[in-house]
Amino acid sequence: MVYFIAGAAAGLIFMLAFVAVAPVMVFSLARDSDSWAGAFVRRVNPTTLMLGLVVVAYPIWTLFGGMLGLLYRLSTQVTPGSGLGSGNLAYTLALALAALMVAVPAAVLLRRVALGVVVIAMAFVGIYGWLLPFLVQVAER
Image 1 (cartoon, rainbow, N blue to C red):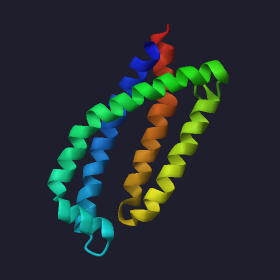
Image 2 (cartoon, rainbow, N blue to C red):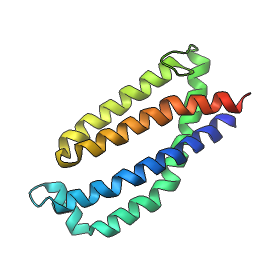
Image 3 (tube, one colour):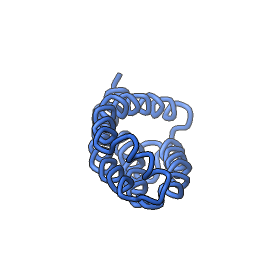
Image 4 (cartoon, rainbow, N blue to C red):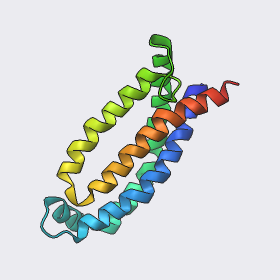
């Protein structure tokens, strides 16, 4: 249970970073009249899309964090061993690789907001890859 709660707490923290960056990305895409993403955002209404992202971010990132907490628990049982400042090196490397595999194509597709994609990916790895194991470690004391 500690792992799920620590993951949910990390999810709430990640949600704060996501909500800070994603709306700026949406409005930046809406101003870009040449791209397919800009046309989509303008057709949906940027304000509605941004508010929808904010409302959906709370439960989704919290639940996702809880699931990553359980995945972290599994990784500590299967491949124990710390490294890179994390409680489990395999978990952190797998998370960083997954974030990289998602962020690179997203940054290429959304060139105008590539910096936002990078910020979200770095926050993802930092919060779920390093903060989550730290929260578990603190909660188990």
